[in-house]
Image 1: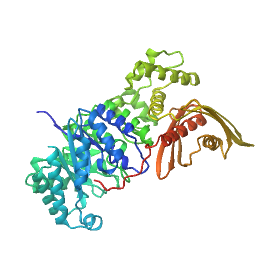
Image 2 (image 1 turned 120 degrees about the horizontal axis):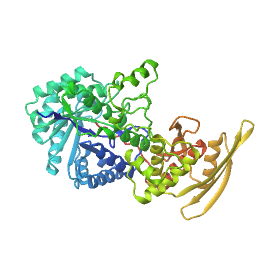
Image 3 (image 1 turned 180 degrees about the horizontal axis):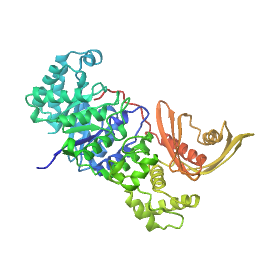
Image 4 (image 1 turned 60 degrees about the vertical axis):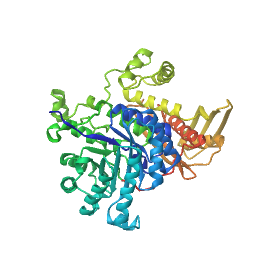
Length: 517
């Protein structure tokens, strides 16, 4: 007898993007969606089509390109939302409309300023309208874990009769606990007469740190779709981290007795890509994908690992795609060696892309004795950022003079897209401040620097530094990242990356405050 499947529903591009400070372009969303496809997620919630023209375009673009996974757009119980959702996903091979509305008394009365009867009618009408467009309709009672059970049962029965094929029990404010949530799933199965006509899904938030545990408890109780985000992104404290849920199922088949369609070897790369694009770092002690997840500092642990890996590792690092550092590249390595290692890391480059990457690799190899896998991943991330952002200005040269008895001074040379070269200089409170002020004198675009962060990609004095910044203009946020062995150069690259996004127009992001499951 084959194992039952749990469907993996990824909402990184919708709920994940609602994390304060994240702003994704259409191309960035498409790149993440392509990687989610490689990962093997069953369902991709590509966005909230009615929320903005940019979100509509992103959902539509993803729906038209990806053919294997189901593509979903979220919609409130408004006619316009449902219609926009369908227009955005109608070209998808497997479209789904996801309709939601508040179901708890506290939200119905205080947020919607409505009453339970009116909300019930809206839910049914919206599901019926969505069903008129496509066969696959999901319904979410928002704040379901604080909803009166009898009202919840009646609502679920009504929307299933109206055509919902998936009902998503949303712990929208992270209120519940595993045993309590599992019991609610069991009671739904017992008290909703037509529940066998729909898949039970769960969507858990992490306000009390219980999102993954609640999701797993629901799977044990019978839920067969689980929603979440890569790296646990999402509103407030985030959503359930999909990589943790997936590996819990993979690691404990004795407990769950279910399986997924996920290629777990793609987990690490997916996590890195999402972190790179969003600018949200993964904490070192994060389960599955954190830098320390498979590192052992204790002498007792190290001794045991050397004798038998499974003494202190319940998962094989390579099973989740952690890169090995066995093959080290250097300045004498050729294109073939670089291509081979990049392919092992999941990067398949065209000839012209390989040539461009090889030139950047050689520059890096001249600065470092050895180029590790982590360096290569950062290099590829840097290459992607350069390609995806219009080069209105290119950093040609940066030079800094500073010291404890000197006023930090920076000279920069920028080349505009029309070939014009401009050099200017400025002083600042520090070398990075001086560089940014010199760049500002040339570009002349007012903005506010709201975040500046430096991370070492690898260990050692020659470590590649990765700089992430955020700048704001007119309430829009622009993320920039740059990598180099010289932190000042990396900082300049990151600032130029953000400025080019700003100057390119349409690449900013205004946070969507619409409520969602």
